[in-house]
Length: 253
Image (cartoon, rainbow, N blue to C red; front, side):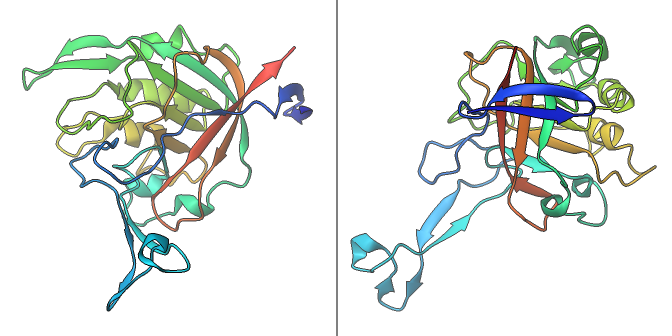
């Protein structure tokens, strides 16, 4: 299904019948994606006395409780409430769900950190040389080299992160939505500074209810770098973060 969409004075042709899903699934069981030392996702049938609400146990329906953490389990989108005293829920933040987007692939630079660890950092200069001259509303970053993170536990692995100056620059050029295949824009252990989060939202100078950060994307190797239309949908969670399902649509000539 080919659609023409006019946005900010530009007309885009997209094939809505060919969505490209960038999310990881949430599921229970032993082989899970997670981060931040959270316990695995649990999906359990509700029990009431001797009654177990599972069809396999004789119930007419499956009726399960689900225990998960939006930051630690799978693809999720955050609001400034992640670092602010008030929640500022992400679930009611977006007023529209389609955005111009650019997908880029970046090979992080190695840096020696004060704690003697070798960090991998996405820098301001790398983004300056890669982001379009006309900046997209949403920037999607794929980290190189690619790896299958479907069942990865990121906890304690000192993952790649972004320079705070890079996030400040993205804000300055008008990027509203920052998406990446990492558990955080910030270093795993930074003493609670969260410099990249603060820079992108310019917090506490302002409470920015326009910008979001989406982490732990699933960007497969067959998805090419370039320009897309992004659909960013998430449930109406009144929380600083919610599981989300970013979907790309290729732009047609």
